[in-house]
Image (cartoon, rainbow, N blue to C red; front, top):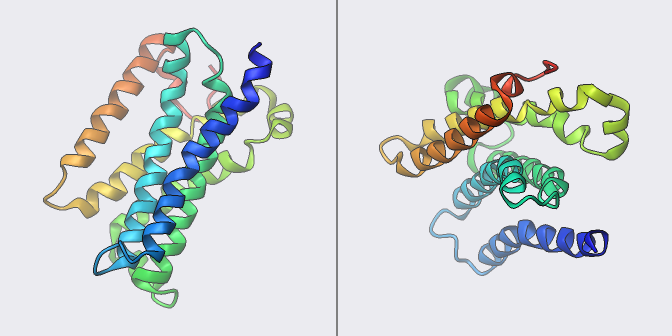
Length: 200
């Protein structure tokens, strides 16, 4: 029964993760992104990437609480969506906010760009090794590698916090959620399972 339901469940998760992008495109073409649509588009894409990272981390506790493995089986998909939105966020930032020519100047003068770049770079090996073939090739090294999601989440959070300036309420709420998820993981599996590239 589980095998019969999994394709439908995966399809629903895929549609749910893609829905915000579809709504964002509709808002863009409908002129509903405010006076600075480029900046608004960039901001929403970045938040979607960060939210997908949080949802990806939530899959393990959800699987444990419900006693169902279906949540684990969509975790990689959600992680890829996080990478998808992060890449779009970067492209939108280059296209609409700073321009392609001023990249190095912006990189050296705006620290939040450094944090965002580090987060994206940490996500790259996760996206590349998210296929079943790469899981088989890496073997026991796959899980330690994919713990890079934890520092990626931290740098992504710092990236947004640095831009929030006085309005930090939303990012502090995200921080509370992330801390709870990490504390739960440490309680269940030990702090060593948070250390990237280290075998338990």
